[in-house]
Image 1 (cartoon, rainbow, N blue to C red):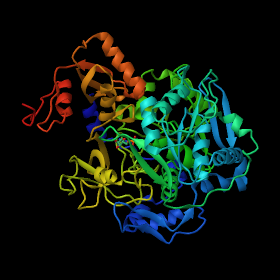
Image 2 (cartoon, rainbow, N blue to C red):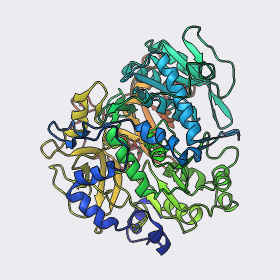
Image 3 (cartoon, rainbow, N blue to C red):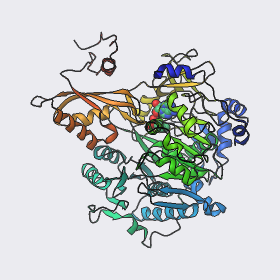
Image 4 (cartoon, helix red, strand yellow):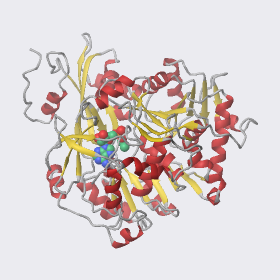
Length: 636
Ligand code: PRX
């Protein structure tokens, strides 16, 4: 069956939760809670906030006097690290495992809440000794090792704002982010393990600093052990600093305003310059902990594994902050899913008795390719709940996940959300009937709809813009250093209605279930990673041979989309196979492996509007062999 036909068929395929799942779910009477939350979202969120510790209570739940710059829990004093670690270190939970970690080569480490808290205190003291102050931005660029969450939490503890740059990005992407955040301190590692090879993070960091020389101190975690260049007076080994007397076990947690920034996370948008979304201490802690607890039904005895990278929002919210706030035990794995064999994940689920697995459709499709024999070899009976995020999950992958991995026992929480939303927005909870490929309904207290060009709700089963109609506590507060762009990008399209524009198109079926169709802007989701067409295009044109470039996303069975690029060469350059390879290598070097086009075509011209905008729609239709549609506004 082709993909579209499968999606249509799956609308009538309903999976009811089992009586056991309903009986054991933490949240009962969800429909009533949802109805009440929508009637009075502020009361709902205030109640949720009361489940956490505050140094000083808030005076106002929501300040909406200056939209879209909403403020939550105004006047409240807190620090997310207090809720994530400090308070647990004083209770019986101090002895509970916070983190179980496995490296790609097979080495393991575990941290109790107490041990993790101590490590964070020590590193927070190191940061303070370097003069890191409240509000200062610290960039973190690392693989998936425990020091990554430790560094994030240590920043938050001293009130610094972390900016984690995904370890899969290369020089220019890192340099741009360092520059934008004006980070004086960079925390990185010598390298990272991936598919049995070492990724040379330190040398990429050196090159990025060369391009953005604002960095004064570099702290280097030793992970892979290869020789790296250490610049005297600038670079320090993490383990050396952590053994100094200044790295003591106790460290005062900075008292923060609820609205003080916690982190900046860069994501792709419609222009080449990445947007630094700003999230705060107060609302974010309430939103992420509530959504994780209710959706993944997290209980004390769970072993929860979010297989994302901490360098993305999924990792920030649902590997680092929310699970710790809930006092959960998390598992984290460093490397590639199929290394050294395609059973790696299933083997770890069996070994560690993982109960909840949260991953992406692209990872599932990648593992599905290897056949059922690999997961069938392992005892996956510990699993009780599954999750998906990052892109629409095609019904075929959904059924495989449900039947082969979950063995028909585990409900799948398909969570729709974004870097900007901080946490889950459209998602089931375990008691909700499921349809493969639908993220079901909006979470309690969240007001989502599908609207037409004029902002009016469309009829059932009609496509439209996915919008969020009311503010929520986990929302990004601004784009770092560029509030105008924040307004323009998200709040101007439906300004009269006050809706937040998600950038996705969607439709609602007769049961009110949401079906996400995909991005309607210049963002391409490759293996669930978000890339702007402009980012890849600017990497291409930074090569001396390329005069102009345009990229499009083309459907791909495993990766969701892959990138196809069209390049106009400068005079004097020849369209050769060698140049093609060189350009791919150039993009890998500049932006990172995920941005590498799977195909590059050399062309003499690109379709453009009269105002000079590249019509990617035309390129895509052409590539798909479809009618190119109305091209009356094309350049003569
Ligand atoms: O297009 C939607 C898709 O991912 C976009 C957000 O990407 P990012 O900010 O990188 O965050 C990803 C992790 C939260 C959305 O605009 N998306 C995310 N989750 C889903 C999804 N599309 C369909 N179904 C999902 N569950």
